[in-house]
Image (cartoon, rainbow, N blue to C red; front, side, top):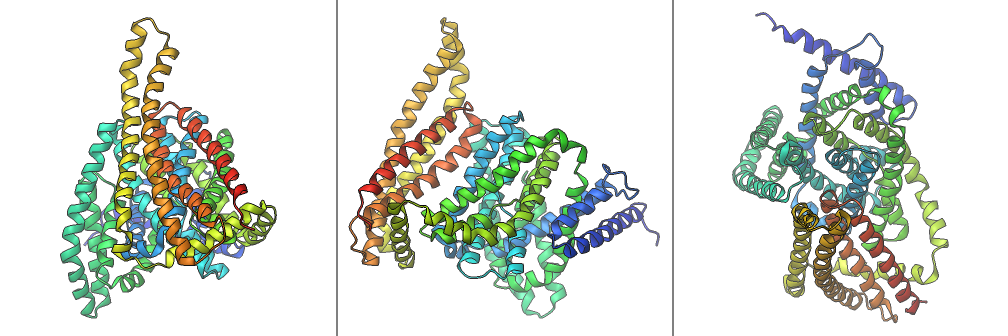
Amino acid sequence: MTASPASPSILVDLALVLGVAAVTTVACQRLRLPVVVGYLLAGLIIGPHVPVPLVADQGNVHTLSELGVILLMFSIGLEFSLRKLLRAGPSAALVAIIQASFMTWAGYLMGRLLGWGAIESIFAGSALAISSTMIIARVFANLGIKGPLAELVLSALIVEDLLAIIMLTLLTAVASGSGLSLPALLLTLARLAGFLAVVLVLGRWFLPRFVRWVADQGNDETLLVTAVGLCFTFSLLAAKAGYSVALGAFLAGMVVAESGRERKVEHLLQPVRDMFVAVFFVSIGMLIDPAQLPPNWKALLAFGLLVLVGKFASASLGGLLGGNSLRLSLRTGASLAQIGEFSFIIAALGQQLGAVGPALFPVLVATCAWTTLTTPLFIRHSESLADHIEQRLPRPLRHFLTHHRVAMGHLRAMPLRKADWSHLRRPFVLLLLDGLTITLLAALGALIQRTAIPALQARGLPHRLAALLVWTGILGLILRLSAGLLGQVRRIARSLATRAIHASGDATEGVEEATRLCLEAALGAMVALPMAALLQPLLPPGIVPALALAALAGGGTLLWRRLRALRLG
């Protein structure tokens, strides 16, 4: 039997990838640097952009790296389940949603300020939104971090991974030609919901039983082959349906996790996954063109600072609003202040679809390397930073945070009996409907202005005046609906605050009012920030930031006045 002509080439490339990666990762370990940096450095060495006589074929390495993406997403799916999501609780969901939404929005604005196109800026914002499960898990293991911090951060990462899967699916549709139009977006969401329903319903009933039966046969090799076979089958189905292979692999992991044998599968899969994930990071390093870094130093500096400051601030705010202590919230923000594997997957998808330019990859890789190095330092000094900030907080705010943490702790500890929470079902449904209506109205406004403004110009009005009249009318309707949304937020927050104070038995005057204010801020942020992230590409660049600044200034002023009026001493 003779080998195919392609075999020697693949063997040479695989030998180069793993051989050089072995040397660079050992060097990084000796220098106490993350192994991810070693993988990226190996890719740079064997890539086409550095004059080193070790050049691997990019096509072969890219094909092998796809296996890494699929196995990585499959492993994440094994870790994900509805039970874990419910156990993560609203606090972790609040941290994840606030951080991911804010970073998507801010990253898009930063891309536009740097002169990038709308689609490329969307990919840039999405790439900055998700923190790295792989990097954080390894840093926590090295530092021996366990307890509440590890639970909150890892639970938030579960939610972020789910958000990343949704992002990948929507980005595929946007970059494939659906554009930013509302009808195409709605059609994409409907098709996605149908695909998920078919795959999960069929997979949930039959495949977990089959995996359980295979596992109970006692042959580890057969179990591994079965699990990996399901992983690639689901990836192929997703690709045939027009979605990313990452989505299919993630769904396969979820289905296998329902078998109850996910720990055994994960243990068997880990060595294979780690090897191909290493190939994936090396393939990212091969795409780095060092010549692109000096011309894009502004983007490198801006994105690095945005990740460090934006993720730290938004995750810390989410932690505080969720009723965690200032120390735990700030340590959570410090832990999540980096980007990693999902950033590269999103950027690689954009490059594959021709939606991003050559500058995004080197900027993201440099940002990842920078923030990966700062994460352990950030975590180590977060406690002293928390002490420093806490000492300088105004007295009313400091006392409020203490009482709010106690009240929210009792609220989280309450049993989830259906009868106790049924009265909130209607306000929550109305809140979601109001948010969806406002989003649709703003998106329709972006379509209406394309025809309304030229019509008004035809009547003799200047372009700026015509645009002002159109958007004044649209924003008037949005503000009218926002009043209803705010009413639902207040109604839900009042009910939750009353229940929390009753459970805690705290009779301090003003505590219930203060807790209600914080719950209003938390619910408002969970609704407003995702809306801002979704609508920013559809609206004129200045509208959403102006509304955000106005809401922040008005809400902050109102909050401070109410806090000063409370007796929390």
